[in-house]
Length: 81
Image (tube, rainbow, N blue to C red; front, side, top):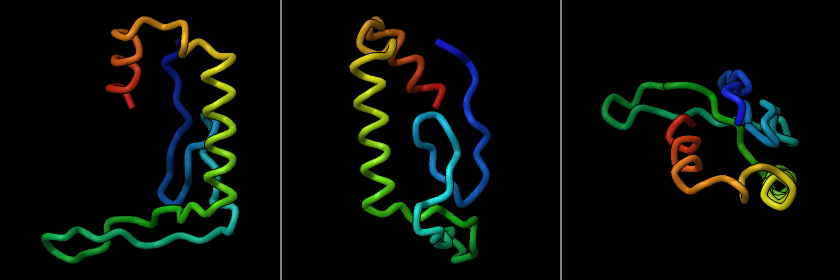
């Protein structure tokens, strides 16, 4: 398992380990519920983005290291995220 992750900037999605824009290019502003102040722009994933993410996840699961990892190693990877 690598320790490198794609750099994330506001308004992008992570699909197949890469930071990408939403297919529609749309974003929405998320706000702090305590202050109602804007926090950042968040990519608005649509059906096309979900399909790409599911395909990438399926390919990674079936052909990648994930199914061969011990549960404890999977847990560490998820906690890093």
